[in-house]
Image (cartoon, rainbow, N blue to C red; front, side):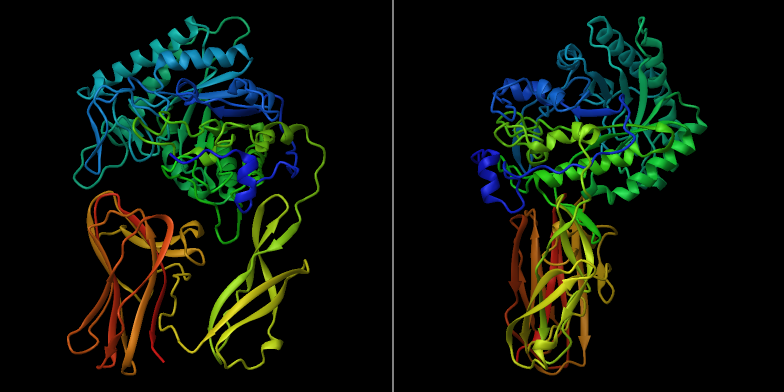
Length: 637
């Protein structure tokens, strides 16, 4: 267990961290109504509290986390609901027992009793409640929609009846105990349906699934159950029904699924979206999708999940899901200010939907701080701690003010550029220097953009000697200085696109399962630039990526590559072969974790036949992942 550091310490250790003396910048968002949802998913709160977690306001006073949220502008809470959140079998990963059969699943262990308690606490503070039916005993998302253990043997009408009876009973009990939800999601991130295989939309080859017909039958019964159970009293609005998908920037997905929902005449009120920039792309894609589906289906829209990291640090050593967003056009720093700006931009996208169809945003688990025993599942740690809106010790972060300041803040000037990132490039002496035409510029709100730059190469003259030299430049239109450091070498890299920045595998030959290996656009996973050669598959696989060079001068060559990944593969090798005399030069690659890059180099080898094939071979277990970047293949001078 790593030491838990408060913000005051973190700000002195981490680049881009938010220091208490720094003023938070939040531009107001026009058009926000009094009823606009400023929501927070607090599903893990009760488990965190029972494991000893505590929360503190800005003045260091211990408080109920719900009260802190309310005081910062949060007016709704969201709760996931699992049917029976206990392990129905032992959980074994990598040959290790994680938790036993019959143990609580963790991740908040959100059964109905727990959710009723949390909902009553929120209602007592005047907050409204969104109940998120997962229709599973544990996490349900686009990659898994497992039936509850009690329903595993049910299909067809029997499954639909169990779903209806359960949904109706939950709503009635919550109402009877003064915890009535104001909105419910009938399913969580149901991109590919729910209650698999009966409600699974798309199946793998040879898999029998219910398809859209099975999916909409199940969805219709869930909707009917909510309507039949709801008995609003005087002054209460009917419960709103939301249908929720992930991948909030993917308009094609939403049209495909919601066209079928409309065709089936499913009764619902709200289209819910998950949107995480580092998974789902630019906020402009989210904005376009929100506007399209609101107009196309005549429904209100809300972002049911969003989050961003306030740091890249890990509070408990378990590893984190977050990766800073950088699409090569714009992004956000992993800082408290960056977190606030990222959330502000999502709120603006929703509030800007015409006809006031954009009704709100929920931040996913702002209170999930690293507390032993309150992890992603029983026996594991918390992979979300650096996306909370409290630091690792439970102190409220200034970014929590985003929910109130988008409403009430005074006019704030547009963000201005404050710093251009230093550029480092390598050039062959006497040849063209590959300085980038655009550079990353950080703005005062900790967002960043890639802007054109102009370089002054005149001091270099005809550089023919090796070594390093500075190059000065300016950001076009701003006059902001930018610096580059150029390393001159006599070694010429024969790999034309060593960092895969063309965004493809052109020139390479791939052998292996489709989709297991590909060029990935994610600067957070890159050694340099933003593209890498990436591998991941849910099943074991073997693959090779090779490239053959001919017409080479005979002589001594070296092959290098940067690599990082989760580790655990059967083997990974960087190799060179077919260079004469039947030889092969290779080096084994052993990955040790995210961003733990290492550079691997084969032994020097002699090309005697004017040709050579270089490559990367992978023998992976299910779920192994990693990235390769910056290949070098050169003749030793």
